[in-house]
Image (cartoon, rainbow, N blue to C red; front, side):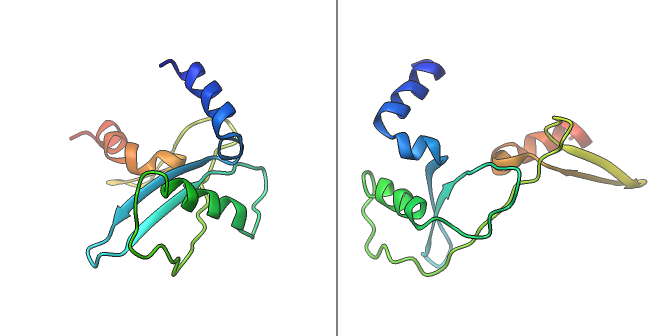
Length: 123
């Protein structure tokens, strides 16, 4: 399926999810607890409050493909992704010899960070 066709289908089937950047991720910690996420809402300012409607949409969609023994939420957190005004996808700086700082891979950090590190500092 092409990306435009998938975007159209998601817009028709799950418009709220599409408009609010809802996508479902699930991972289990060493102690057996589950980390569930998340949504990406982009704006020019930081909004200090989470939307319970969006959080519930994440949990509800998770329930369409996973059965949890106890779906109670025990903690929540909000993360913010930096962005650069000039359109670059990452900030690269060398504050002193032998030290390289890279940041700004947005919501793809877990996916891209090791490949980006290899590209920037070699390996």
